[in-house]
Length: 131
Image 1 (tube, rainbow, N blue to C red):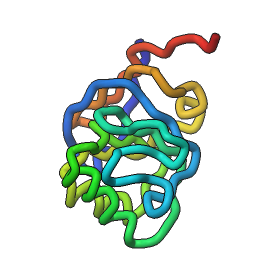
Image 2 (image 1 turned 60 degrees about the horizontal axis):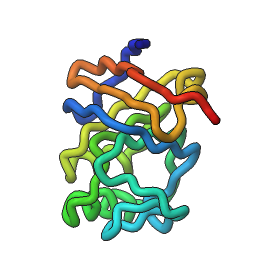
Image 3 (image 1 turned 45 degrees about the horizontal axis):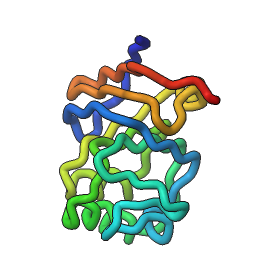
Image 4 (image 1 turned 120 degrees about the vertical axis):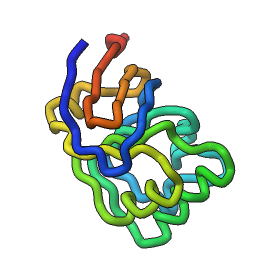
């Protein structure tokens, strides 16, 4: 188990399975009613790990919409956040962390298990080997 220190932007506790995206625009690439990404992967109840985000201010409302429809991720962990994601996470009350080292981001893939704490401590609990 490896532990890392992240910056808590919206502190909270979450533990769960990861869904990883290199770049994401919440507007146009996330269905706020289904809680799915553009490629059909569900983010509902998962920890969304994002390298970078992009997009318009509507993205904040998409994040809030995920919460409204009950299909929000447990937490969002990013290499580098942007104001659109921060505002959406605050509105929706979704824990948000930034500062994930790029080399750790590269190791994470869908199906890993992460734990994030309000203090910013993130633990990579398990990451299945690629098969």
